[in-house]
Amino acid sequence: MRLGVNIDHVGTIREARGMRYPDPIEAALLAESAGADGITAHLRIDRRHIKERDIRILREVVKTHLNVEASLDKEIQSMLLDIKPDWVCLVPEREEEITTEGGLNLKTVPGEIEKATKKLKNSGIMVTFFIEPKVEMVEMASDLGACAVELNTGKWSEYPSDANYKKIEGAAQVGITRGLEVHAGHGLNLRNVGRIAMIEEIDELNIGHAIISRAIIVGMERAVAEMKERILLGE
Image (tube, rainbow, N blue to C red; front, side, top):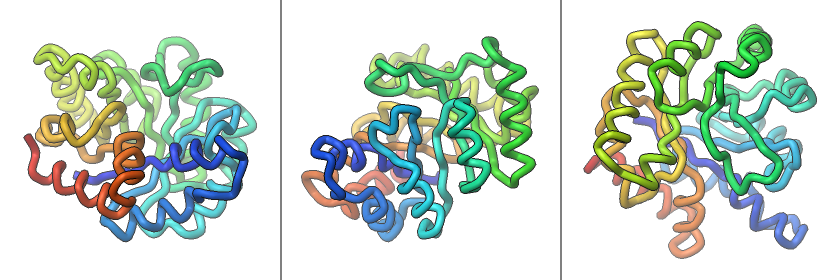
């Protein structure tokens, strides 16, 4: 199972003072050196943490794979077609939200989603949809041309009930039968990641806040290594 390290909150700390440091690029390189299998960054419309400059440099220096989370905003989509990250994960975005609040509702603008997906794939970019762990959403993602789905583990992370776990498990199984890669993330940390890592159908976990928070205490390389070890061990 791959670990994608989300470096957004390194940018959050940088922007808190409007400084040039800490640099998300340096954090990405340290994460890779510690065993990260990919780097994830969310280029938001308001640029609250990650900037275009960061994405362009990351594209040049990341040796594993670069996954950019983005909305359907036309300016951002055009920029991504130029930069060509390895993956683009389409996510919903609301200006006032503290973090991504839920999965992309594929029923709202399916035509727009399908059009953006085709453009990205035609440029050689793999496309993921960040969705709720619902069978219906997984099936729609497949129909709209996604290469992968990232299942939102936020609800389970907050309320780790068997019912919420089974939803993730069931959605992952449907994803595999539909020929999709299955990724997962949101709210995962050292205490809860092991159980999600036990779902065999999941190919990749994307984790940011927990790793960056831990890195403040023990350093980036140790924080990534600890998470990798916990994923390997499972529950």
